[in-house]
Image (cartoon, rainbow, N blue to C red):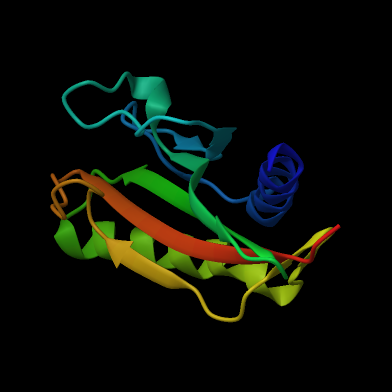
Length: 146
């Protein structure tokens, strides 16, 4: 699992190279990509350096005699000083970037299952506490038996 998370992180960093989003200080900043095991910090608790962010975390898994499935969540958080429409436009741009992971589905010894699911809003409440916006992408991977 650690190898899979590291590979996802490396690919996300490559996808996000040169991309910038606004941070709470009003400057353009590249999203920080991290592997975590806990929920990302929420508004009201953040420091200015927390946004923009992308976290990769393991969520669940299952196995049978013939294969193993791992579910991974990618959670993005962005800040916008603009209006709500600007926040959603930035979040949609982030979604388009992150879903670029599906262009190459091989993560040896895993293979990304076709399709991705995403949810808009704070993973716990579903809310977008303007000026903070959240996106959660669920991705599953199959591993052949060894």
